[in-house]
Image (cartoon, rainbow, N blue to C red; front, side):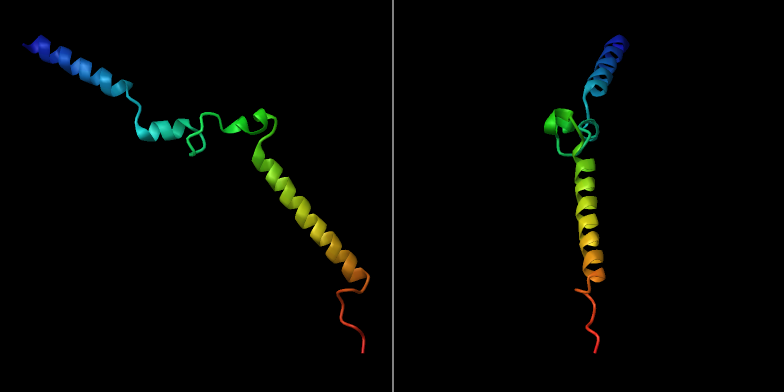
Length: 81
């Protein structure tokens, strides 16, 4: 009887150890959207976030350059009275 209980206990432990919990599956998906490979955008050629950051930096750099040029040319200054 004790051997039977021991065998059942070991079997249950193996079944519980082999099942992956929801939190482990979420952690293994790497990005939280359930994709197996989050780098599949552009076949992993470059990561999308640095591209977005460079695009934002370029946009704000262009805006600041236009603002500086407008200020030096007198477009944004108050007219002298």
